[in-house]
Length: 504
Ligand code: ZN
Image 1 (tube, helix red, strand yellow):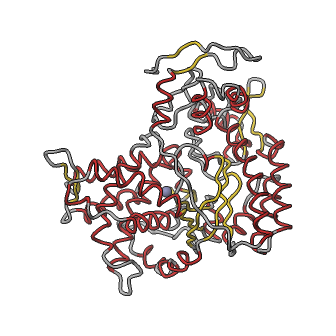
Image 2: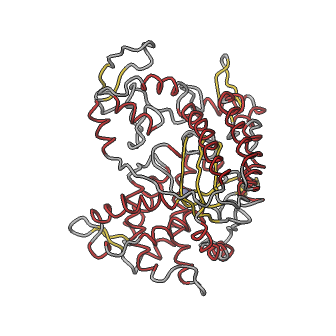
Image 3: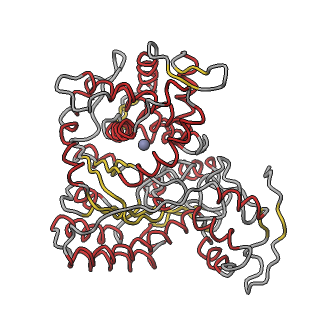
């Protein structure tokens, strides 16, 4: 049940019924007060005059991604937002503000996604599936209609009711009013940019938005080589908590930090060594996920949709298409200005509150950066494609709704395992003195992600790690309730958890 008190909404708008009730205003104000506003800094001076105009066009296209995402979260979200806009400038404005940050009426700071507008539970499958559809109903339909399987499990369709049955509707059709103008803006930007690799990506992406097949533009995205780093389209599957299958629209517009990116090329050369060092029991074979995995350090200019909602991303590894990952590779992007904001505004206060005195002085922005970096690289290493009982499949498909949480847990656990491997390596690409800061920063970082709640893949993945390391004694709680690392035990504890996750 919802522990919040709901008041009847004193509704005066032209569409009675759209908003029927609301959570207590003080709750919403309190949630807003938990968020620290941050100004992200970036420098566009390296861009050609044409590319400065391209940024403007891409921002417009990104706004269409945002509207598409709103519709993915809840079918009538756009109408709700329009309704709430009327309350700007009134004492009820916080509802509008919070709705904008959450892209819908559910509180993403709460792991049960409490509704703060209209007392309705968030469906696990968000707006990707029809209201009230269960997993059993979906599976029963496919059993009776095996020919629908491809379209129903496709990441780029929504499922809707038709008579007594179900049907799949392609994104290009369902979101046509948004994707057509977005594709047009991408074509204009492609014609204008002075970066040929960006022109290639933007034109193939424009075509793919209208064709529901993103492989060519996913490949072109990995080859971006200019000053702008742009991601636009349907990508992450976290919003679909029913099957982790449907891709959510998002956009990142970023400018590349060339100096930082070059430093990381040396890490990339250790890729095969890292995969070979994975702790796997006999009988398990790791085929690395992709062929290459370039790393870009960027500063974020603009982000929308899934990327501009709730908890903000500071790093990602894309694309998610296993075929592209297998045949072309993937790319890691680290959003430096977002990461710095999180270290200063979140990690330091957490360490001051929860870490034992001895650990507090160890944490460093450099360790945080390298841990995030290794987390992303690990996403790109695998395992992705697997064979189960002689049938070729993917880890994503087999783990269904558990996939995202286990994947995030393994990216953290193997990420820190891999960081230690690189610290120990001959000609180590890691900065001096990193080991001292690494584990304390890893510990502090856990309390950062666990706040997202176990309903979030990252929060759930961290809950597993924290409990594991407390059970093995690698993390210790002292008599004052403060946390520290047992440096004798932590490496073994991480190794064992990594082996278990890889085996799952
Ligand atoms: Zn991750």
